[in-house]
View: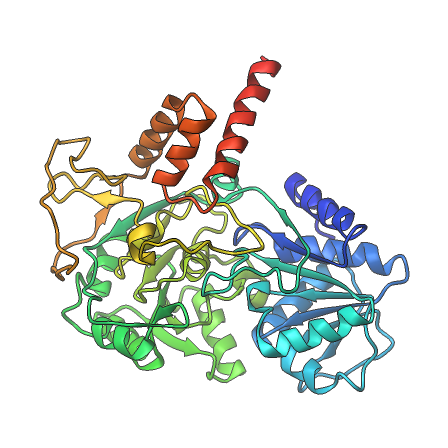
Length: 466
């Protein structure tokens, strides 16, 4: 039986209290914070009171993964999934979303429906299931690290309340997530690419990224900063991922490509070899950015020590899902190699972010311009908030056009502590609620007024306590 950490029990209890008022609640906690453990704990308590529950996932790997978690909690369960035997007498069913969709008229509605990776909940298949069960009085619980769709839309379509756990930074400070070192190249030239459904057109960014001459070199920088560490490379396409794996193998580093079409047995073989250290690098498309917990899947301790970002994305959710794979708890800092320039669009993994069910607010500025929150000095390599002069070496930035040139060069480590120090200094100098709101706007926060009130009230509480 797994014992919950204090914040996990608090979050689970908050979700249960919310369900006394509404029929649907969204549980938000960073990758690696233990969302599956929280929901398993909630399920165990629910079935003790005679309830039934369906736990819905969108991939076969996740069916296997959740099975292990339920066994650790001694929860009796069956399956509604292709190739798995259905036992209607079990109070809990682990469901493949497609199989459940095909059997809606053959299985009873549960008392509780849990939606894994709930940022996918507004898809046609999930929506059909959620709408049907909600009409029958089923309680809906969603869990996600990033409560927006990949396009930035919110999840108010299916969830009436949201309960949010500790932030990435808070979990790092308490030792529940690992710290990290972030290395970044110059931004690749995406000036000729277009957007579709809120993100770059895959075929166009594949053409940019699938080149041996791309800024820096994934193999060289792995050898320099993360040699012999277990790493996952996030690629644009299957072809791109295969090429990246080939490049690593050509350099004598064992690497394999996996994707959603790789047979389940072959994926498990690759995952076990990765866990055993026989494979150092796994290259992938969409596998590791969607809730995969390798330790739970292979049944023993294993963690991703490095993330290699080779897919440019306009989606904050996708960026955080990817870097979060390397932030699971471990002694050594995670290594993040951002060859796609994603930090320029989305900031650092542990930046303060405000999530709402309504999603990202659209401003008048172009999304990419509004999202830039850090800048890297070409002279001393310090990374700081946008400013005309580097605060470290006083380098004056030239006025740049909107066209960004692609430059070859080494990745440089971001001075994360300096970024945080500058942010704390700025925040400490904002003495009024109005100044805090102005600071929130300058940082590009989605709801600067709400953030300002939170900070201001927190100061007052500390003053009263002191």
